[in-house]
Amino acid sequence: MTMTIEERRSLSKMLMRLFDLWGLADEEQAAVLGYSPKNLEVIRKYRSGEPLADRQELIERAGILLVIHEELRIIFPHNLELAYSWVRMKNKRFDNRMPLEVMLEDIEGLRFIRNYLSGVV
Image 1 (tube, rainbow, N blue to C red):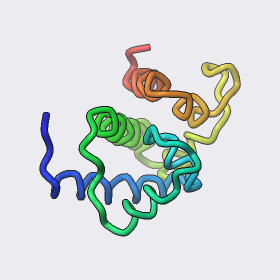
Image 2 (tube, helix red, strand yellow):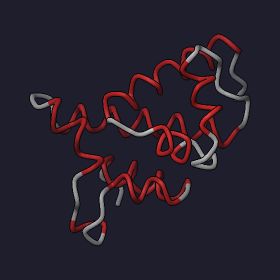
Image 3 (cartoon, rainbow, N blue to C red):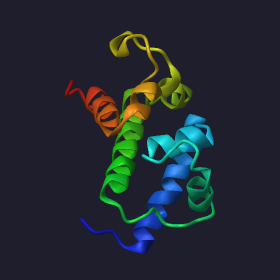
Image 4 (cartoon, rainbow, N blue to C red):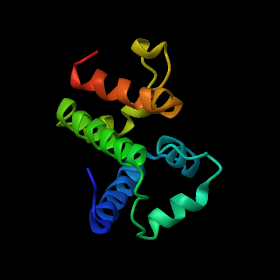
């Protein structure tokens, strides 16, 4: 699916807001989007309103992150603090690691967390 520049710009803004809610460091933001954690320039660009790059995997990662956010809001509708901090809470289901650690591994880690929250795993 091809997205317009404006759709990718809107997606970029949503992701930056989500990263703020989750309290992700710039390095974590870059890594979860599939960039090198040292590539902080890309995060600065997105923060300044640049659209997400037109790359299939990047768009997929963005979609997965937004689904994870949505699922957390559904699971914890009356506790937004928990919904936003869940990614940093160690979980026995993930070998006592934080969901964020799994998400930072690769796109499969992102998919695993999404599927776990969606009840697929």
